[in-house]
Image 1 (cartoon, one colour):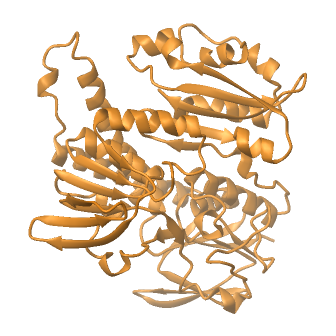
Image 2 (cartoon, one colour; image 1 turned 180 degrees about the vertical axis):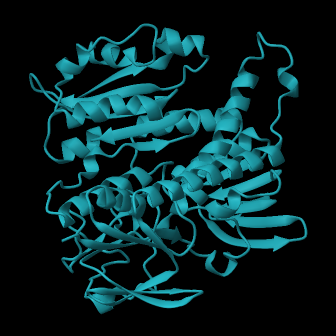
Length: 450
């Protein structure tokens, strides 16, 4: 008999779970209260990368000033770019709708809540529908977090959603939060002409990332004119006729036309009434095991709601793991195999262990680097900032444990190491791979030859 699976949330986690379950013969109902594709497709990954690519192209044109005429006139037509963003999102959403329909997934538009451990109620404009299930997958996503002094100002300040839909490029922009989202928006709006101040309360941008990688990114930002303030917070903010006035913890005041707050996101399962299904929550998240199973064995939680990783591709992998387990297959999710990517320029990407995390586990490691300033391809492309670093066991025949990259096409290059880690490659085996010349990828062999 077919398993009856109900999935709450049609973002990357819910989408992956729905597709996998349908392909494996389950009866699938997918409930979404907004748009198919969730945050990633509609208000996150896809629209932001569309805008970032325009900024990147503009940067390349300007960099060609020594040998290309007419670069002075290069500019982005903001209204046209926003139309492109909307077109990309609309096209992908239509393709997703068609794909789900082809697979036989029933899509229900409405707000879901649990009635008990076997029943979900969905409220829509047509009333309330009762959905019985053999297994349920919660993929409800996350929402922006606003620390003090911003809770009372959250309707006035920008969040990551609103920052994608501005009708203009602000002349002065203060960004609170130096994580991935803040750094990407800093890059984008600076390139488009904003005077950007980036405020981060921790000692460095991208907290948790390799210190040398972060130094390269910060140096690049400051060289281009982005003001970076670390170990700093916004103590108060007031909006007047001339824009925002932000008083900082370092005693200075910064003025801005717009204020973007992107210090993080938190799981969004309020309203699902998980307690009715005996699903335990802890510290604002839904804890799960390696198969994404909650405290209620027939209910799973994937993506942002479980707090393991706020990355779209992590949510997709978790959706697959959950469905496989529901259908009797044990394929545990491994967070150590998830690449972490930042689409600034230079790009930043990492996967697996850092030196500090491996050493904390008692592993004797070796870190080998290759700097892009020595790459023929990087020189030809005028993109020589940064380096790649390979972390491996120091012993003879030691495995590749992780990698960090800051530089051109880092978000593509990182998958070389994802494959190596998942395949259990030794550093020597990876060094013996033949990389084409001239490419950025051959830097992997160069690093491991040192």
